[in-house]
Length: 235
Length: 61
Image 1: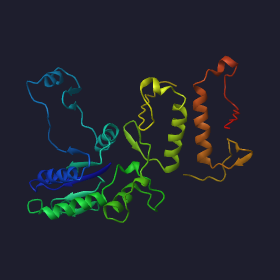
Image 2 (image 1 turned 30 degrees about the vertical axis):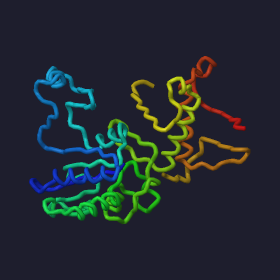
Image 3 (image 1 turned 90 degrees about the horizontal axis):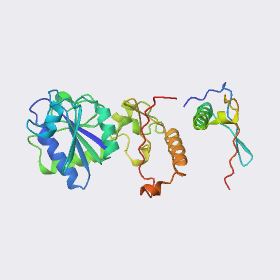
Image 4 (image 1 turned 180 degrees about the vertical axis):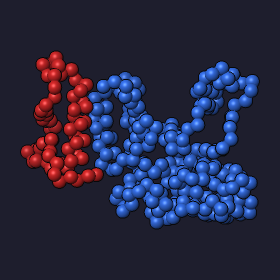
């Protein structure tokens, strides 16, 4: 999973550029998730629907299931938490974020004013040509990276998560799947970085524990994807 | 990973008769994992109320 955000001041064409980038990534057969960041109250649901009535009645977590599934949570979640949950549920190839100026992920800026160490390119969203868009998405493939805590950083001389993020964004480090932890850990909502040893250790210990279980009785043949959550209430 | 030279090993590991050196972090992680696994076992039925010394050998042939 790699993350790219499109940032800029108001009315600089963020939304149209976000749509173009999503479209081109899906043209390249990538699975894409996207996030819209707003400082205002946002509603996807509207008056009159059954799910709207459920939320109005006081439900804090409404799920609508039909041709699609959507969650409507009455809470503002942190970006890091949302990224972790997207990884848990879908693990898409790319997450495209519209907004979130101050986060440590690769960015495309739609104006000079918001340019920083994570900016891979400043683009005039209103005048970008088709060829320039292709080049931009090439750059997105090259420079964007996963949730910082899920990358191994101690083997390449970079130890600080924000420094490694900037190194990826500036093209000084190449993202490759080998730098990706297989174990993703979150404790009390915070993503916890693991080095290669701890990731392997957790993986092998848990696989060791799971192997004797009769998983076939549950229709499970392989251990491709394991989700465990622990509610640590009693000793 | 901290490599504290002055620490005292709590875990002795031998594989095929070869003593394996463990640094503090690995010593800790093995100890805590095994103690965690043992907590789930009803050891008090065997007269064990406190875990003071654990010996495990694994025949992996």
